[in-house]
Structures are given as structure tokens and as C-alpha cells.
Image 1: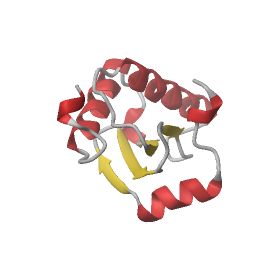
Image 2 (image 1 turned 90 degrees about the vertical axis):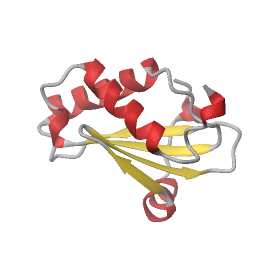
Image 3 (image 1 turned 45 degrees about the vertical axis):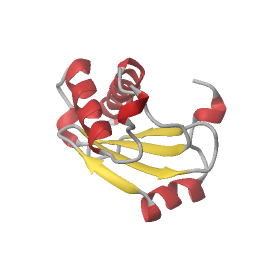
Image 4 (image 1 turned 180 degrees about the horizontal axis):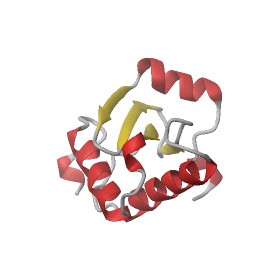
Length: 116
């Protein structure tokens, strides 16, 4: 991933949390907000509720890989934050991919059916 595609600034995170929309699924929560850019910026988060540093790192890796492998096209111009839930522990990447795919398809605006 290139650095311009990574969500980094605290004010951008705050804007996504405050003004964005969210869709939750079994293993993750998807938050998104328009960013008025021609590309998406994304962040993968795992809080201490997920577990120790090893479990949090694994959760972030799983979510990154699931995002990379997903076949659902996401509309350009969004800030996206994907947050791991406690239930992400002890699951395989394909289950996280299904969860992410489901959340994206249920998010109006982020998922465009014409954009397959």
C-alpha cells in the first residue's frame, strides 16, 4: 500500500467517527465517510479488547489481507476505518473476508452495484 492511501491524521479519524456511517458484522466494524479526494484512504484498527499485542497484530493482518482479497469494488473518494472485534480471534482469513464483504455490500454509497 502506498502511504497516501493510509489514513493517518487524528482529525481525519475524528471526522470518520463523528460524521461517518458504520456497518458492523461478526468480526469487524466498518466506518466510512466521503473525503472529496479521487482515492480511498484506509486504516485497520484493533483495540486492547481484542487481546495482547500479538493478537492485535494478527487481527490487523487478517483485516488487511481480507481487504486485499475482496472482490467487491469500493467507490472511490472515501475514508475507511476497519475496526476488529473480539470475535476475530481464532478465525481464518476467509471468514474475515466474508464478514468484510458483507459489511461493504450493506453500506450504501461505499458499495456501488454498477461498480462490480
